[in-house]
Amino acid sequence: MQACRLIASDLACRRGDRVLFRGLSLALDAGQALQVAGTNGIGKSSLLRILAGLMPAFSGSVEHEGAVGLLDERPALDPQLPLGRALDFWRRLDGSAKPVDPRLGLAHLNDVPVRYLSTGQTKRAAFARLIGQSARIWLLDEPLNGLDNEAARFAEALAAEHCAKGGICIVASHQPFALPGMARIDLADFVA
Amino acid sequence: MSSQLFQLLRRDLAMLLLGGRRGGTALPVLFFLAVAMLFPFAIGPDARLLARTGGGVIWVAALLAAILPLDRLIEPDIEQGMFDQWALRGISEEWIVTVRITAHWLSFGPPLMLASIPAAALLGLDSKTLSSVELGLLAGTPGLAALGVMVAALTAGLRGGAALAGLLVIPLAVPLLIFGAGSLSTGGSSGIALTAAVSLALLAIAPFAAGAAIRAARG
Image (cartoon, each protein chain N blue to C red):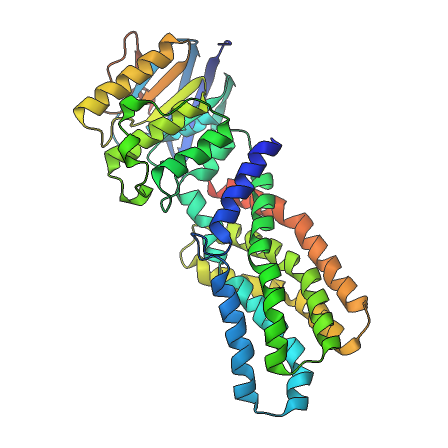
Protein backbone atom coordinates (compact mmCIF):
# COMPACT_ATOMS: atom_id res chain seq x y z
CA MET A 1 0.00 0.00 0.00
CA GLN A 2 1.22 3.48 -0.77
CA ALA A 3 1.76 6.11 1.86
CA CYS A 4 -1.15 7.94 3.35
CA ARG A 5 -1.27 10.93 5.60
CA LEU A 6 -3.76 13.31 7.12
CA ILE A 7 -2.75 16.71 8.40
CA ALA A 8 -5.08 19.32 9.78
CA SER A 9 -3.81 22.60 11.11
CA ASP A 10 -5.50 25.15 13.31
CA LEU A 11 -9.05 24.08 12.45
CA ALA A 12 -12.05 25.98 13.66
CA CYS A 13 -15.64 25.00 13.07
CA ARG A 14 -18.65 27.26 13.10
CA ARG A 15 -22.26 26.13 13.08
CA GLY A 16 -24.70 28.99 12.71
CA ASP A 17 -23.24 31.84 14.75
CA ARG A 18 -21.57 29.56 17.30
CA VAL A 19 -17.93 28.54 17.03
CA LEU A 20 -17.81 24.92 18.22
CA PHE A 21 -14.06 24.50 18.51
CA ARG A 22 -10.93 26.27 17.38
CA GLY A 23 -7.18 25.79 17.29
CA LEU A 24 -7.36 22.06 16.58
CA SER A 25 -4.37 20.57 14.81
CA LEU A 26 -3.62 16.94 14.14
CA ALA A 27 -1.26 14.90 12.03
CA LEU A 28 -1.61 11.20 11.35
CA ASP A 29 0.72 8.95 9.43
CA ALA A 30 0.17 5.51 7.98
CA GLY A 31 -0.92 3.00 10.61
CA GLN A 32 -1.97 5.55 13.21
CA ALA A 33 -5.34 5.84 14.87
CA LEU A 34 -7.04 8.60 16.78
CA GLN A 35 -10.16 8.77 18.87
CA VAL A 36 -12.03 12.05 18.97
CA ALA A 37 -13.99 12.17 22.21
CA GLY A 38 -16.41 14.68 23.57
CA THR A 39 -19.97 15.14 24.70
CA ASN A 40 -22.94 15.26 22.31
CA GLY A 41 -23.08 18.35 20.15
CA ILE A 42 -19.48 19.36 20.76
CA GLY A 43 -18.63 19.01 17.06
CA LYS A 44 -17.25 15.48 16.57
CA SER A 45 -19.29 14.80 13.44
CA SER A 46 -18.55 18.28 12.10
CA LEU A 47 -14.83 17.66 12.61
CA LEU A 48 -15.06 14.44 10.64
CA ARG A 49 -16.98 16.13 7.84
CA ILE A 50 -14.37 18.89 7.71
CA LEU A 51 -11.58 16.30 7.58
CA ALA A 52 -13.45 14.51 4.78
CA GLY A 53 -13.69 17.75 2.85
CA LEU A 54 -17.49 17.67 2.89
CA MET A 55 -17.80 20.78 4.99
CA PRO A 56 -15.67 23.91 4.78
CA ALA A 57 -13.68 24.71 7.91
CA PHE A 58 -14.35 28.12 9.45
CA SER A 59 -10.58 28.52 9.49
CA GLY A 60 -7.55 26.30 9.13
CA SER A 61 -6.67 23.74 6.51
CA VAL A 62 -6.80 20.01 5.88
CA GLU A 63 -4.44 18.05 3.67
CA HIS A 64 -4.71 14.40 2.94
CA GLU A 65 -2.83 11.89 0.90
CA GLY A 66 -4.89 8.83 0.07
CA ALA A 67 -8.60 8.32 -0.43
CA VAL A 68 -11.01 9.05 2.40
CA GLY A 69 -13.82 6.72 3.46
CA LEU A 70 -16.56 7.94 5.74
CA LEU A 71 -18.92 5.88 7.86
CA ASP A 72 -21.63 7.94 9.52
CA GLU A 73 -25.22 7.49 10.59
CA ARG A 74 -26.44 7.38 6.99
CA PRO A 75 -25.60 4.08 5.31
CA ALA A 76 -25.88 5.42 1.72
CA LEU A 77 -27.65 2.23 0.67
CA ASP A 78 -30.86 2.37 -1.36
CA PRO A 79 -33.63 1.60 1.16
CA GLN A 80 -35.87 -0.13 -1.38
CA LEU A 81 -33.20 -2.47 -2.75
CA PRO A 82 -32.31 -5.86 -1.34
CA LEU A 83 -29.09 -5.51 0.63
CA GLY A 84 -27.07 -7.62 -1.82
CA ARG A 85 -27.94 -5.37 -4.75
CA ALA A 86 -27.49 -2.17 -2.75
CA LEU A 87 -23.97 -3.28 -1.83
CA ASP A 88 -23.30 -4.45 -5.39
CA PHE A 89 -23.86 -0.90 -6.61
CA TRP A 90 -20.97 0.34 -4.47
CA ARG A 91 -18.79 -2.66 -5.30
CA ARG A 92 -19.17 -1.95 -9.02
CA LEU A 93 -18.65 1.78 -8.48
CA ASP A 94 -15.50 1.15 -6.46
CA GLY A 95 -14.37 -1.62 -8.77
CA SER A 96 -14.03 -3.89 -5.76
CA ALA A 97 -13.49 -7.57 -6.38
CA LYS A 98 -13.41 -8.52 -2.72
CA PRO A 99 -16.39 -10.51 -1.50
CA VAL A 100 -18.21 -9.14 1.54
CA ASP A 101 -16.40 -10.24 4.70
CA PRO A 102 -18.37 -13.23 6.05
CA ARG A 103 -17.62 -12.14 9.60
CA LEU A 104 -20.00 -9.21 9.09
CA GLY A 105 -22.82 -11.75 9.15
CA LEU A 106 -24.66 -10.26 6.17
CA ALA A 107 -24.89 -13.32 3.93
CA HIS A 108 -28.39 -14.33 5.05
CA LEU A 109 -29.65 -10.74 4.60
CA ASN A 110 -28.81 -10.42 0.90
CA ASP A 111 -32.46 -10.62 -0.19
CA VAL A 112 -33.84 -8.38 2.54
CA PRO A 113 -34.62 -4.79 1.49
CA VAL A 114 -32.36 -2.33 3.29
CA ARG A 115 -35.30 -0.53 4.86
CA TYR A 116 -36.24 -3.67 6.82
CA LEU A 117 -32.79 -4.03 8.38
CA SER A 118 -32.25 -3.18 12.03
CA THR A 119 -29.96 -0.33 13.08
CA GLY A 120 -27.13 -2.73 13.84
CA GLN A 121 -27.54 -4.67 10.60
CA THR A 122 -27.53 -1.41 8.63
CA LYS A 123 -24.34 -0.40 10.41
CA ARG A 124 -22.70 -3.69 9.51
CA ALA A 125 -23.77 -3.21 5.89
CA ALA A 126 -22.22 0.26 5.96
CA PHE A 127 -18.98 -1.36 7.16
CA ALA A 128 -19.15 -3.70 4.16
CA ARG A 129 -19.49 -0.65 1.88
CA LEU A 130 -16.55 1.05 3.60
CA ILE A 131 -14.30 -2.02 3.27
CA GLY A 132 -15.15 -2.34 -0.41
CA GLN A 133 -14.10 1.25 -1.04
CA SER A 134 -10.48 0.36 -0.12
CA ALA A 135 -9.90 3.90 1.12
CA ARG A 136 -6.70 4.43 3.06
CA ILE A 137 -8.14 6.92 5.53
CA TRP A 138 -11.16 5.80 7.53
CA LEU A 139 -13.31 8.35 9.29
CA LEU A 140 -15.73 6.54 11.57
CA ASP A 141 -18.53 8.55 13.15
CA GLU A 142 -19.98 6.69 16.15
CA PRO A 143 -19.13 3.33 14.56
CA LEU A 144 -20.45 1.31 17.50
CA ASN A 145 -23.95 2.80 17.54
CA GLY A 146 -26.53 0.05 17.30
CA LEU A 147 -23.98 -2.78 17.20
CA ASP A 148 -24.27 -5.65 19.66
CA ASN A 149 -21.24 -6.66 21.73
CA GLU A 150 -19.98 -9.24 19.28
CA ALA A 151 -20.32 -6.91 16.28
CA ALA A 152 -18.73 -4.07 18.24
CA ARG A 153 -15.65 -6.22 19.00
CA PHE A 154 -15.54 -7.13 15.33
CA ALA A 155 -15.74 -3.46 14.28
CA GLU A 156 -12.78 -2.76 16.58
CA ALA A 157 -10.91 -5.68 15.04
CA LEU A 158 -11.62 -4.33 11.54
CA ALA A 159 -10.22 -0.92 12.49
CA ALA A 160 -7.16 -2.59 14.00
CA GLU A 161 -6.63 -4.65 10.81
CA HIS A 162 -6.98 -1.50 8.72
CA CYS A 163 -4.30 0.30 10.76
CA ALA A 164 -2.04 -2.78 10.73
CA LYS A 165 -2.18 -2.69 6.93
CA GLY A 166 -0.97 0.90 6.99
CA GLY A 167 -4.26 2.77 6.96
CA ILE A 168 -5.34 5.69 9.09
CA CYS A 169 -8.35 5.48 11.34
CA ILE A 170 -10.13 8.34 13.08
CA VAL A 171 -12.97 7.37 15.37
CA ALA A 172 -15.39 9.95 16.67
CA SER A 173 -17.23 8.42 19.57
CA HIS A 174 -18.29 9.16 23.11
CA GLN A 175 -18.04 5.42 23.80
CA PRO A 176 -14.76 3.63 24.50
CA PHE A 177 -13.29 2.14 21.33
CA ALA A 178 -10.58 -0.45 21.87
CA LEU A 179 -7.80 -0.07 19.32
CA PRO A 180 -4.15 -0.76 20.21
CA GLY A 181 -1.95 2.31 20.05
CA MET A 182 -4.83 4.72 19.50
CA ALA A 183 -4.24 8.33 20.47
CA ARG A 184 -7.09 10.33 21.91
CA ILE A 185 -8.12 13.95 21.84
CA ASP A 186 -10.98 15.48 23.73
CA LEU A 187 -12.82 18.20 21.84
CA ALA A 188 -13.66 19.84 25.16
CA ASP A 189 -10.05 21.09 25.20
CA PHE A 190 -10.65 23.07 22.02
CA VAL A 191 -13.98 24.66 22.81
CA ALA A 192 -13.86 28.26 21.74
CA MET B 1 -14.45 7.89 -14.37
CA SER B 2 -16.58 6.87 -17.35
CA SER B 3 -17.22 3.44 -15.86
CA GLN B 4 -18.32 5.13 -12.63
CA LEU B 5 -20.69 7.35 -14.60
CA PHE B 6 -22.02 4.28 -16.35
CA GLN B 7 -22.75 2.66 -12.97
CA LEU B 8 -24.52 5.84 -11.88
CA LEU B 9 -26.61 5.89 -15.06
CA ARG B 10 -27.50 2.26 -14.54
CA ARG B 11 -28.68 2.95 -11.00
CA ASP B 12 -30.60 6.08 -12.06
CA LEU B 13 -32.36 4.24 -14.86
CA ALA B 14 -33.30 1.37 -12.56
CA MET B 15 -34.79 3.97 -10.25
CA LEU B 16 -36.60 6.14 -12.75
CA LEU B 17 -37.57 3.97 -15.69
CA LEU B 18 -40.71 1.90 -16.04
CA GLY B 19 -41.64 0.24 -12.76
CA GLY B 20 -38.68 1.96 -11.11
CA ARG B 21 -38.38 2.29 -7.39
CA ARG B 22 -39.10 6.00 -7.43
CA GLY B 23 -42.40 6.04 -9.24
CA GLY B 24 -41.10 5.31 -12.70
CA THR B 25 -42.57 6.22 -16.02
CA ALA B 26 -46.11 5.00 -15.46
CA LEU B 27 -47.31 7.88 -13.31
CA PRO B 28 -46.40 10.81 -15.61
CA VAL B 29 -47.68 8.97 -18.69
CA LEU B 30 -51.00 8.06 -17.08
CA PHE B 31 -51.39 11.60 -15.82
CA PHE B 32 -50.66 12.94 -19.30
CA LEU B 33 -53.23 10.62 -20.90
CA ALA B 34 -55.79 11.47 -18.23
CA VAL B 35 -55.50 15.17 -19.06
CA ALA B 36 -55.81 14.46 -22.80
CA MET B 37 -58.89 12.36 -22.05
CA LEU B 38 -60.53 14.87 -19.69
CA PHE B 39 -60.09 17.88 -21.92
CA PRO B 40 -62.66 16.85 -24.59
CA PHE B 41 -65.16 16.15 -21.79
CA ALA B 42 -64.70 19.66 -20.46
CA ILE B 43 -64.67 21.45 -23.83
CA GLY B 44 -67.39 19.47 -25.53
CA PRO B 45 -67.44 17.55 -28.79
CA ASP B 46 -66.60 20.47 -31.10
CA ALA B 47 -64.01 18.79 -33.33
CA ARG B 48 -62.68 22.03 -34.82
CA LEU B 49 -62.16 23.67 -31.42
CA LEU B 50 -60.50 20.50 -30.10
CA ALA B 51 -58.17 20.25 -33.07
CA ARG B 52 -57.21 23.93 -32.73
CA THR B 53 -56.48 23.79 -28.98
CA GLY B 54 -55.36 20.16 -28.72
CA GLY B 55 -51.68 20.77 -29.45
CA GLY B 56 -51.46 23.34 -26.68
CA VAL B 57 -53.21 20.97 -24.29
CA ILE B 58 -50.65 18.30 -25.03
CA TRP B 59 -47.88 20.76 -24.21
CA VAL B 60 -49.44 21.84 -20.92
CA ALA B 61 -50.09 18.22 -19.98
CA ALA B 62 -46.49 17.29 -20.79
CA LEU B 63 -45.18 20.13 -18.67
CA LEU B 64 -47.33 19.16 -15.70
CA ALA B 65 -46.48 15.47 -16.10
CA ALA B 66 -42.78 16.35 -15.97
CA ILE B 67 -43.30 18.01 -12.58
CA LEU B 68 -44.72 14.87 -10.93
CA PRO B 69 -41.45 13.05 -10.13
CA LEU B 70 -39.48 16.14 -9.00
CA ASP B 71 -39.41 15.45 -5.27
CA ARG B 72 -37.88 12.03 -5.85
CA LEU B 73 -35.09 13.16 -8.17
CA ILE B 74 -32.45 14.51 -5.77
CA GLU B 75 -33.68 14.69 -2.21
CA PRO B 76 -33.67 10.97 -1.26
CA ASP B 77 -30.03 10.67 -2.34
CA ILE B 78 -29.01 13.63 -0.22
CA GLU B 79 -30.90 12.25 2.77
CA GLN B 80 -29.29 8.84 2.47
CA GLY B 81 -25.81 10.32 2.22
CA MET B 82 -25.25 9.11 -1.35
CA PHE B 83 -23.97 12.49 -2.51
CA ASP B 84 -21.43 12.57 0.34
CA GLN B 85 -20.11 9.16 -0.62
CA TRP B 86 -19.87 10.17 -4.29
CA ALA B 87 -18.02 13.34 -3.29
CA LEU B 88 -15.52 11.25 -1.30
CA ARG B 89 -14.89 9.20 -4.43
CA GLY B 90 -14.15 12.35 -6.37
CA ILE B 91 -17.24 12.20 -8.59
CA SER B 92 -18.35 15.78 -9.06
CA GLU B 93 -21.93 16.83 -8.46
CA GLU B 94 -22.02 18.27 -11.98
CA TRP B 95 -21.44 14.86 -13.52
CA ILE B 96 -23.95 13.18 -11.24
CA VAL B 97 -26.55 15.78 -12.19
CA THR B 98 -25.77 15.38 -15.89
CA VAL B 99 -26.33 11.64 -15.59
CA ARG B 100 -29.53 12.20 -13.65
CA ILE B 101 -30.88 14.63 -16.27
CA THR B 102 -30.25 11.97 -18.92
CA ALA B 103 -32.04 9.30 -16.88
CA HIS B 104 -34.90 11.65 -15.99
CA TRP B 105 -35.38 12.60 -19.64
CA LEU B 106 -35.34 8.95 -20.74
CA SER B 107 -37.94 8.19 -18.09
CA PHE B 108 -40.49 10.74 -19.28
CA GLY B 109 -39.47 12.29 -22.64
CA PRO B 110 -39.75 9.34 -25.05
CA PRO B 111 -42.72 7.84 -23.13
CA LEU B 112 -44.62 11.15 -23.42
CA MET B 113 -43.80 11.31 -27.13
CA LEU B 114 -45.29 7.86 -27.52
CA ALA B 115 -48.30 8.75 -25.39
CA SER B 116 -48.87 11.80 -27.58
CA ILE B 117 -50.06 9.51 -30.36
CA PRO B 118 -53.15 8.26 -28.49
CA ALA B 119 -53.55 11.72 -26.97
CA ALA B 120 -53.62 13.24 -30.47
CA ALA B 121 -56.31 10.74 -31.43
CA LEU B 122 -58.38 11.69 -28.37
CA LEU B 123 -58.10 15.36 -29.27
CA GLY B 124 -58.66 14.83 -33.00
CA LEU B 125 -55.34 16.31 -34.13
CA ASP B 126 -54.36 15.84 -37.78
CA SER B 127 -51.10 14.16 -38.69
CA LYS B 128 -49.33 17.42 -39.53
CA THR B 129 -50.08 18.89 -36.09
CA LEU B 130 -49.09 15.62 -34.45
CA SER B 131 -45.72 15.62 -36.19
CA SER B 132 -45.10 19.24 -35.05
CA VAL B 133 -46.07 18.23 -31.51
CA GLU B 134 -43.68 15.28 -31.60
CA LEU B 135 -40.81 17.35 -32.97
CA GLY B 136 -41.54 20.09 -30.45
CA LEU B 137 -41.56 17.60 -27.58
CA LEU B 138 -38.31 16.09 -28.82
CA ALA B 139 -36.78 19.57 -28.74
CA GLY B 140 -38.44 20.70 -25.51
CA THR B 141 -38.46 17.74 -23.12
CA PRO B 142 -34.65 17.69 -22.59
CA GLY B 143 -34.95 21.27 -21.39
CA LEU B 144 -37.83 20.29 -19.12
CA ALA B 145 -35.71 17.46 -17.71
CA ALA B 146 -32.78 19.81 -17.05
CA LEU B 147 -35.08 22.35 -15.45
CA GLY B 148 -36.73 19.68 -13.31
CA VAL B 149 -33.45 18.30 -11.95
CA MET B 150 -32.11 21.81 -11.33
CA VAL B 151 -35.19 22.87 -9.38
CA ALA B 152 -35.27 19.53 -7.53
CA ALA B 153 -31.68 20.17 -6.38
CA LEU B 154 -32.47 23.75 -5.36
CA THR B 155 -35.48 22.73 -3.28
CA ALA B 156 -34.07 19.51 -1.79
CA GLY B 157 -34.32 19.54 1.98
CA LEU B 158 -36.67 22.51 2.14
CA ARG B 159 -39.93 22.18 3.99
CA GLY B 160 -42.67 21.83 1.39
CA GLY B 161 -39.96 21.41 -1.24
CA ALA B 162 -42.17 19.34 -3.52
CA ALA B 163 -44.87 21.99 -3.82
CA LEU B 164 -42.26 24.72 -4.13
CA ALA B 165 -40.49 22.81 -6.91
CA GLY B 166 -43.69 22.69 -8.94
CA LEU B 167 -44.27 26.39 -8.46
CA LEU B 168 -40.69 27.20 -9.48
CA VAL B 169 -40.67 25.04 -12.59
CA ILE B 170 -43.84 26.48 -14.10
CA PRO B 171 -42.65 30.09 -14.67
CA LEU B 172 -39.21 28.89 -15.80
CA ALA B 173 -40.82 26.54 -18.31
CA VAL B 174 -42.84 29.34 -19.90
CA PRO B 175 -40.30 30.00 -22.71
CA LEU B 176 -40.37 26.32 -23.68
CA LEU B 177 -44.15 26.40 -23.71
CA ILE B 178 -44.36 29.62 -25.72
CA PHE B 179 -41.98 28.43 -28.43
CA GLY B 180 -43.08 24.78 -28.36
CA ALA B 181 -46.82 25.35 -28.43
CA GLY B 182 -46.35 28.48 -30.55
CA SER B 183 -44.71 26.44 -33.31
CA LEU B 184 -48.09 24.75 -33.81
CA SER B 185 -49.93 27.91 -34.83
CA THR B 186 -47.13 29.53 -36.84
CA GLY B 187 -46.16 26.33 -38.59
CA GLY B 188 -42.67 25.88 -39.96
CA SER B 189 -39.62 24.91 -38.00
CA SER B 190 -38.59 28.24 -36.45
CA GLY B 191 -40.62 27.69 -33.29
CA ILE B 192 -39.14 24.25 -32.85
CA ALA B 193 -35.64 25.62 -33.39
CA LEU B 194 -36.23 28.22 -30.67
CA THR B 195 -37.59 25.50 -28.36
CA ALA B 196 -34.40 23.54 -28.95
CA ALA B 197 -32.34 26.65 -28.23
CA VAL B 198 -34.07 27.16 -24.87
CA SER B 199 -33.54 23.46 -24.13
CA LEU B 200 -29.84 23.69 -24.89
CA ALA B 201 -29.43 26.75 -22.70
CA LEU B 202 -31.17 24.95 -19.82
CA LEU B 203 -29.07 21.82 -20.37
CA ALA B 204 -25.92 23.93 -20.24
CA ILE B 205 -26.86 25.75 -17.03
CA ALA B 206 -28.55 22.97 -15.06
CA PRO B 207 -25.55 20.79 -14.06
CA PHE B 208 -23.67 23.76 -12.63
CA ALA B 209 -26.66 25.32 -10.88
CA ALA B 210 -27.77 21.97 -9.43
CA GLY B 211 -24.21 21.00 -8.46
CA ALA B 212 -23.75 24.28 -6.61
CA ALA B 213 -27.12 23.84 -4.89
CA ILE B 214 -26.23 20.34 -3.70
CA ARG B 215 -22.89 21.51 -2.33
CA ALA B 216 -24.52 24.47 -0.61
CA ALA B 217 -27.11 22.21 1.03
CA ARG B 218 -24.34 20.07 2.49
CA GLY B 219 -22.87 21.13 5.74
